Image (cartoon, rainbow, N blue to C red; front, side, top):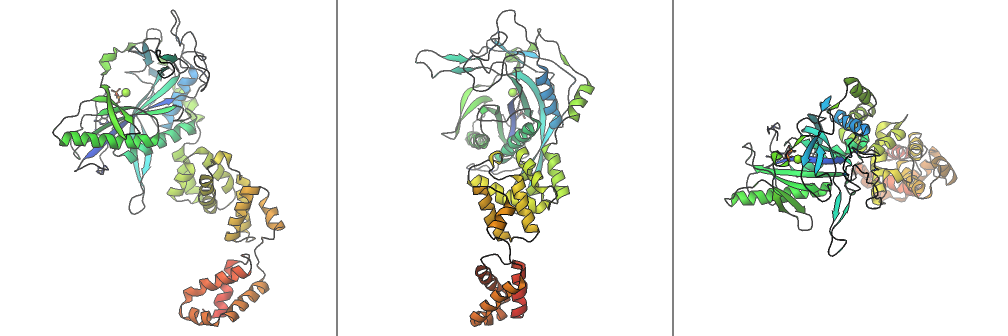
Length: 499
Ligand code: ADP
Ligand code: MG
């Protein structure tokens, strides 16, 4: 349909697990993202997921004679917001076309889509891949070719009755954004990063819930292989891949298949294929149809879609902060590493949580607590940040206790566990359970003297090997029930041992 240009001049990634020889894989993704809106693209029927079959169907969706589509302005606004989030060209004039084909779950006999004049033109998505052997992350820009609005189809069900197929039209006519990437993606890892990042952007914008299990986000994966730097090979399109993991697996399986065919002296036929996750293979579904097979033409029931630059500017001025901007702001204002910033912005809820913890506190310390302690524990206990039993205020209070030297880092970890399971105010818990750090020099000194007196052999050793002081610190901490200030213990030991 469009002329394909190799816009990505980069070090080719040649590693295709299980494949022989020196090959490069070229990938372009068509992501279908369901627009978050209460009603469908051209009708007032509800989009609610999980409703009884055929309860969200209006006369328009059922394609009754004489029914006319009316554009849902909220879907247009959502597409424009998404275009802005992808830093893309917003087309003030676009056209709805009919893409003609028969399908039992498409009562109109055609899908209303946008062909020559989509609502959104070229944009970009920044992804991070890695880490490489040095632990560095590579930042890569993937081009977006276009985004257009179109109707979803219904669902045929072939497993409900031995002799009949059923159809559920609830999804018929729901608005989709088809987001088409350039063939800039060069590995399964980049493809997974691209879908992940796109989903993050959509979720920040609130334009698609990104829920792949419910089918709100699905990817058609185009794969071809070539000798590095050579001409693009013939692509195959793997339809409707519904998880990020499967996107990666489908690409690798398909690349291996194509390489094997070519190395055997065969040629790749352009075709549509399906990925079978159980077998880890792709299989042919049908030979590829071309645009002209669909007899596209502008839908005579709909005027061209036109809006003004002011309309776009107004939507732009109400856009939330985007993940890339948030990333750079946290990195620069909070002094975080790029890596920590990416973890924190990976979902908006984590970023919001972090910002509440960090407000008025040391940004790095807050990041350590959220990433290492909280996210680690959430994962372990199979929780998400949204149902975290511990609040930003509670973690903030723990950090304040550390900063004020009231508790040691070790005690803070115990305190975190207590607050996680029992809840409560960290300050009160520390008070009630006597968890305060001992900073009374006399008490610590007594413990230090006792340990030194009881271990003359170790004292001789530590004078030879000053690193051994760690053993003494451990003993004193034990003797004080972990409550001595580690800095004070260290300092006193060094003085008394003459290190
Ligand atoms: P169609 O509707 O025929 O699928 P589109 O233009 O909608 O065509 O999408 C084509 C997709 O295939 C784009 O994502 C594009 O980047 C990708 N693509 C094009 N050529 C190749 C190629 N040689 N190898 C891999 N992907 C490709
Ligand atoms: Mg396509």
